[in-house]
Length: 381
Image 1 (spheres, rainbow, N blue to C red):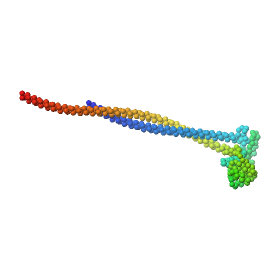
Image 2: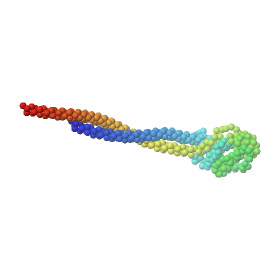
Image 3: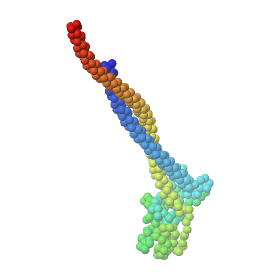
Image 4: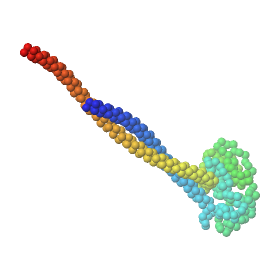
């Protein structure tokens, strides 16, 4: 029985050791699965942040693209409006507008351009230059008298009135000495930029106008100018040398600004269109990046789910192995207790056997003595 219990105890110890090793293996595997899950969670969080950032960038770009497109449409609408203002509309077109229409259609070959399209000046001089030019802002600069005759036939046929400046017939006045009085900015003709061949026509209109800083300076300087000259303020008030004064504003005062806008609009439209195209391209690139981020996020989600499942399986396997270990420990403890009990019983039996052996030897001694006594008695008999 003791040998059987020893064999069972040895087997239980082996099972217990195997269970401990299995538990250690399961714990290591569980730790690896947890680390893999944490890695998957980190990758998932990074993909989520990247996806959210891409979404925010796309939303911002969408607003920018819409704003850029709106800017392009506004500029194009403004260009169309300015073009309509310059060319007129059907029977309501003015004389200068009809001449521009004819020049555009090739019916006025000697037409060079409207005066306001041929000159440039700084924006803060536009009010003064526009006031001096007045209705001459829309004057048509042409080559010669033959162009004037062609324009006359057109206006006779369609109606309208216009100022024409044939370059071959221009006789600009001799230049006056530059004003030296305080408050005078300079001659109007010197404050505009134009092609050299167009300068005679410009000088005819602007050669006798002094641009002044304010009303007081204009009044003072006008008294020293020749009778056919004038002084004009930056706000557009005109003080003639002969005493006449022209004040107030008209719609024509904005023609120079409109002409400047007309010249700059194509470049602005091109710039806005380029910016819109760039933003759309960036938007497409960001959308592609968002799709990629979505795909990466989906992959990370799948990997995270797999790692969570593997971690769960590893946890369950660890718990099952731990239960087996507890059972092996209980079995080993029971076998140990049984073996100890058997050893105790064996020790007690051995002690009892020893006691019985002593009693038996004592009895044998007594028996031998008794037999001796019997032998002695028989001998006496």
